[in-house]
Length: 67
Image (cartoon, rainbow, N blue to C red):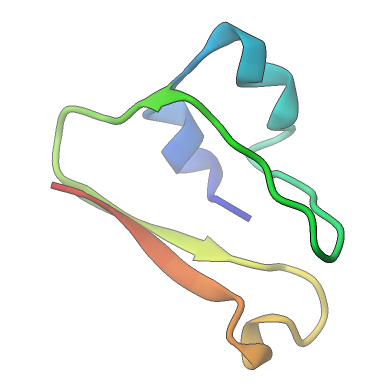
């Protein structure tokens, strides 16, 4: 899950907006999604995490850094 704050600070391409619901992108195993966006102007770090049970413990977490 990318936090809602990231998407609030980001301009998504109109065709990609329906891929994000409530600040989340839901994917099944082996799936991928591409998003076209304009990153925020101000430098920031946004957490990236999977909210499914035990997934973060198996390494499904990270961050997005905007320089």
